[in-house]
Image (cartoon, rainbow, N blue to C red; front, top):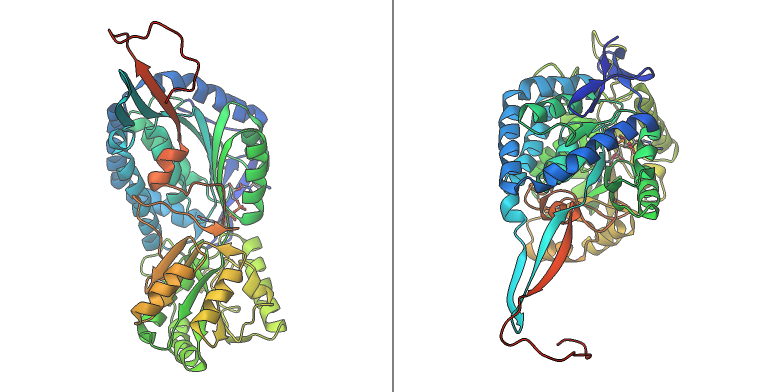
Length: 495
Ligand code: NAD
């Protein structure tokens, strides 16, 4: 069986032990992925360390040239990459193309790295003294990424890390690892020197080896909250800089004055796009008043029944399969749990069968009404095509409910009331906020990150925060001898 290999020092490296990679639309194992270990990580680290000095000394404008070529290659190869993403993840090709385009925007931002790395300068901070800060790369940095955006999330990380002068080791999700490898090959074609970008495949053992290697100076992680928290603790304890983005339970609040048809349309994409396997998916609709809830549900039910669901690699579908049989079973377990807890399942996607793809990991769109905060389907991240409607009496109650949730990744308010929108944006304890925008994913020149247990660490992903995350500030004060030199020693603090 074909193996998705490691990519170390510009070469493919296979591994004796491997993990299966399946096509979620058919349920078949289509290839295997190398299952790395401490030895593989040591090889990648050695390659990245060896490549660092020359890459560090390469002028930022030259590093940016590689990013320009890389962007062109990503565009030229987009159809192939999108097929790979869809085949292993299950999402539709249109959705995969959207993901890739959002990823490419991060490469475009990294092309501006000479401007982004400009330091801060002060002339004459004292007699004959000038001072400046510059931003230097850290060395070898690592990225560990989730299954749900196999192209985009890695692109949040390494273009900027590399453009800033670091060398990089990516550990993609073992569930859909092949697109990340294909993208790394394009970086080599773009002229990136060997060893600057490396990919090590595998699971927990590979990750732990990266965390335990002193030469890895920083780790960017995106994945589920329990793993994010563990990575943050272990990496920080080892003295690394760590940013670890975790899970989510994103609330959309629907006020009675909202354009309900528009809210229903956009919530369809936000809740069921990518089968709900997005960290910014809306999984809770908090309706203020029974009338808003009834109208929203009435508008969504027929749309859910009409969802076009099938193998993501076929064009023109709305939703594909869930990533693995295990994940499908977990999602089905949550639905059973919601029913048992007394929530009303007003759209039931449990028995969906896709003709010709009976062994695929499909679940249809599900909508729960009468969900209450103590239910597991409200408290936990389901990461499937399941939207929960919670009914409340006021905007204040909706804000308090959202703020009390352990996660704080994204949220949205549907309204026509400017005062309510302003209050919401001010008081909500969530990192990314939309007003009539259900998926408020920041563009590449802003930064992405949640609050509370959706992010461990200080700096958000990509955008300006990434420049700070992947560099260290150095403050330099410089004085050259002049005719005003003092002839005696000064012992008081210079001021
Ligand atoms: P996951 O946490 O299972 O895996 C993420 C990465 O961690 C993978 O590379 C995996 O191999 C590795 N990993 C898994 N278990 C590990 C362990 N015990 N020790 C060390 N490494 C381990 O997440 P997933 O299922 O791939 O992705 C879905 C999750 O990611 C969801 O919770 C989703 O909300 C979250 N996510 C968050 C964001 C964000 O920006 N906040 C973005 C995308 C996905």
